[in-house]
Image (cartoon, rainbow, N blue to C red; front, top):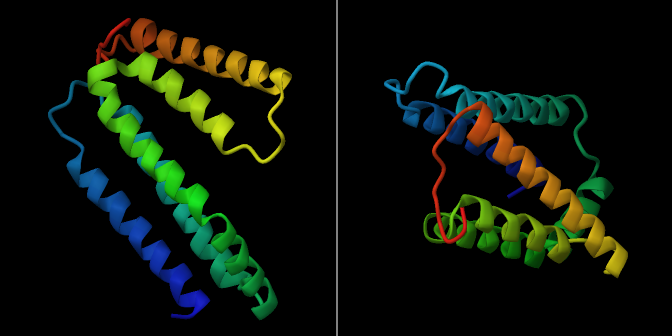
Amino acid sequence: MSGRMKEYLSVAVMFALTGFFFLLTPSEVASGGSIFPKVIMALLLGLTVLKLATELLHPKSGAAAKKADKAAQANRPRFWFILGSIIVYIFAVDSVGFYVSSFVFFFGLTVAVQYEKRTPRGLAVRFVVVTCFMLFLYVLFTKVLMAQLPKGMLF
């Protein structure tokens, strides 16, 4: 399969997934309760249209396509690690809880997939950033949106 065909296929898959998720969004959700998934789907749709426009207006040359394929081959183990982590996270949310599993997931993923060398300072920075992000999510979901998230061991 040619590189251009792969690009068009990936765009078609993204359009299909966005439509599928939109159809799965329940209509009986309380007013405002479906805002977050609809915003995510709109962003996903917008990025897919941007990808399609980029591919149509500025197709990759043969050399650029080969370079992109080589980079994709080099990053394939990283992709499978991230996909596996997402799957583990999905199953951990119910048993461990949203906040604990999200903290472990975000911190572990940012450390595991970083390209630069790991240093104590870099780990501390990631720890602070993930902690602030989790505090933001706590305030957003628990205090502002008053959403009931999966509870687990600590929260």
